[in-house]
Length: 151
Image (tube, rainbow, N blue to C red; front, side, top):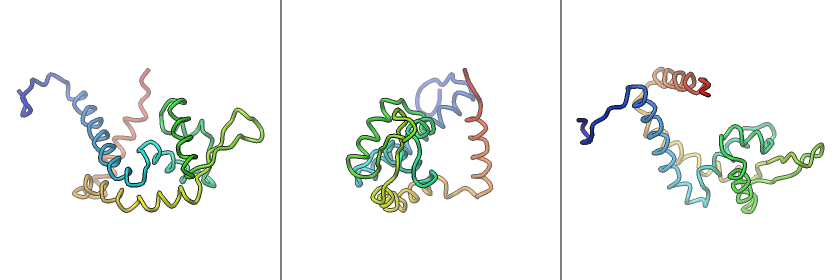
């Protein structure tokens, strides 16, 4: 029996993957708490981050969707809500009406800036005890895992 009072028959591989999932879920939950102050959800925040990092603050909806790994239906709802509050603009591509461009607005950039300090506090809480070298090692391992194609 483990400390938590249940028999753990998972392999070390499963336990590692479950720890990664639990950490990601906890981070999302804690982030969502302070994002509420800005009337924004975690996925909406991530769309703004992707657009802010994109050339000229814009990208196609398809690319943002691919980067975020969410369904097209969810992406449509997220972007509609962001547009409604003035954080992004959505427009058709001149070359193809089926292609939608998303562009972060100055208001969207401002909300990202305002969220930035609090976000850093949450991130530091998890990683402050680790050296930059150790963090680089962790990042390298996680990127390797993410690069594995599982069919």
